[in-house]
Image (cartoon, rainbow, N blue to C red; front, side, top):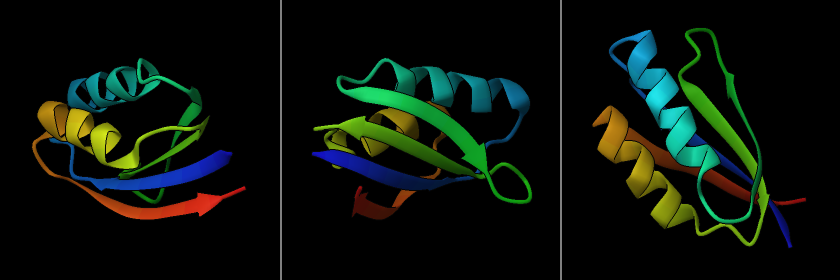
Length: 74
């Protein structure tokens, strides 16, 4: 089942944002990762069978402030 996962994050710098995107891209089942929002503070992940809680946890390890906003079936 394809999912759209939105994670709200507060990166301190561009390097932290890049590290968070790389961590999300390495997760099992992820097809695409993109940043949205005014300050590029929302990460939208689209994938098949992705564990949203584990994904948010791995992003939180890189950014220190991330929360799961939405999980939606596509």
